[in-house]
Length: 267
Image (tube, rainbow, N blue to C red; front, side, top):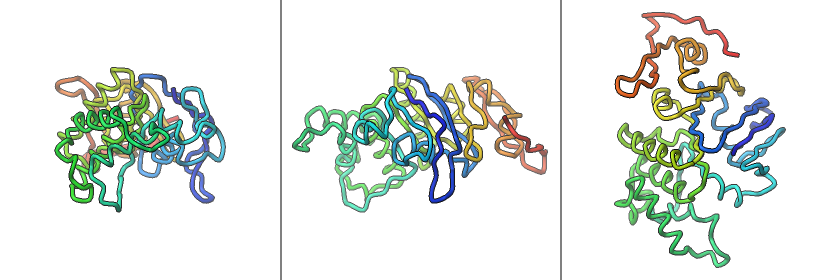
């Protein structure tokens, strides 16, 4: 579904992503994690076609996204950035409808199908009550929920989320990830950049850890979410134990006064 081959990209004269190659199959729910500055957002921007590669390619459904163009890519993959700001007084429903832009007809008007897709997206994110409020008049968390609804309205087979729930409270985070899991079970391919290790382990079946612009670790959650690997990647002592209900591995950070880890490297 998504194939990144020898990808190198960055800003100015600096490479942020340094020759990464990876494949994400149809129906995977994958978390992309790693320390600050490891290249997570840059990788996702390249996957979405926002940043062109200096070297290498990004293919979606077997097609080079730079060749196919932005409109085609937007019909295949929807993106949710860390923050989405607008200086215009759009109503929330109007913003969600923008997710239907790749499908607009030659007249640039929204169809009944477009409206239904937008309303369904708002219902799934529990934002219907915000439909006729202006985006600038809602809270930051509510605005982010509207941005997520816009991506859902695109009705793509791929969702790319960059710390999409970081501004949400715990209940809304869980709600969004429950919806993402439902979409994944129906066949959607989902990639989530996350800093919340435990949320990633609860929902993602595969974890990819970046460090210094390269892949440090990639594998099934239960295989890579360990004391040793996490402590080495984040260079701080971490202990892993099972979730009391689901059994999923969960990380517990150890204060420096209670222990020390030798920050090795994961190859």
